[in-house]
Length: 305
Image 1 (cartoon, rainbow, N blue to C red):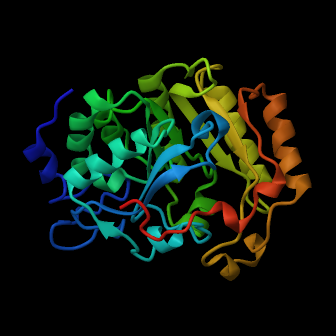
Image 2: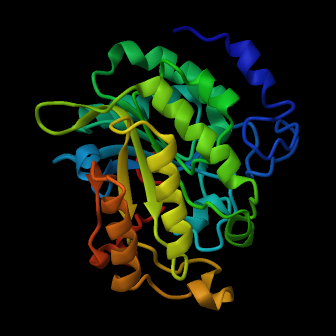
Image 3: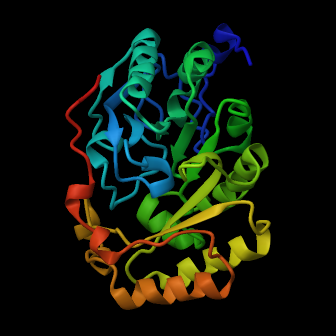
């Protein structure tokens, strides 16, 4: 697949890449995502803390991009998602970084929160794809426009979206996005359409497919159950993997919301996990509650850039 670079760059002039549809001319000022028109990232390194089928033995080749289209009050990556930490990269430098991660033994290339830079990323992927022999992962919040995802068709091997909320009120309160589920639910369907059913290598590494993450939040087990029920009712069985996360840790501004300024209890997580199993959502991963530790968040020190 080839890309018309000049056409892509026009997308920065009247930005509608994400559901915010802010229409910012990002060459002149940041969009709602907090980003201008220059590739910016905060870390590029082997990452051992993704799901086992992604991290494997050597780690996922993770690039953490700066900015975000959501405004999660509990974001563990808030220095880069909300506070602008990052280093501007040329496309050529990003190519070197991605190929370098492959040389270091990465099981895949893990592009984390990259939607806001899609016009710059697609030409990079065009140029490096002939030299890659590992999958490309699109690791995102799930808050995506299907029109934007279709631009990625043929580039992405594995989609790794969150599916955070069912309730518009909850999504508005904690992430400033009352329309979250209406976009994310359609987005995961498009991701599954593109990737097809999960495909694994002989070593257990995921080569193609969609792995949907859902992190249980304190006091929100009912919302979690509604998301699981929607998955069971709306997504073909066997078309995706589920990663049910217990790792919530109150970061950033979570202290301003007393009801989520704590970790998830074993009881809350077990109730959600039991519901997932009862619904037949047993293809994927569960997480030990001990995963809720601050050390699972990598240092954003511009490593690898």
